Length: 75
Ligand SMILES: [Zn+2]
Image (cartoon, helix red, strand yellow):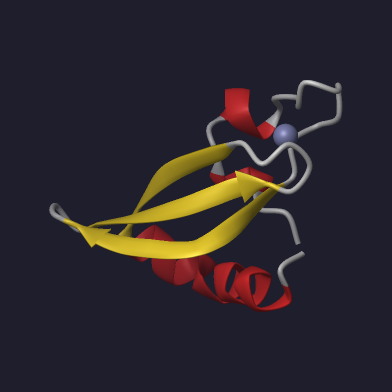
């Protein structure tokens, strides 16, 4: 499942160079950051663009199942 809803709007609604909408999936890299933040690495399934997003620990807890499932299924 794509995780576009986790990204800032310009990335969630952004397009690959071939005009498709980005389809963001987690790369599997997740890092705890100072200040109660979690950094999550995402890539676009179509164009392989990569971005890091930052969630608070609480936001991450809410999205964790979704993120882990997307890492497992890789789609
Ligand atoms: Zn893309």
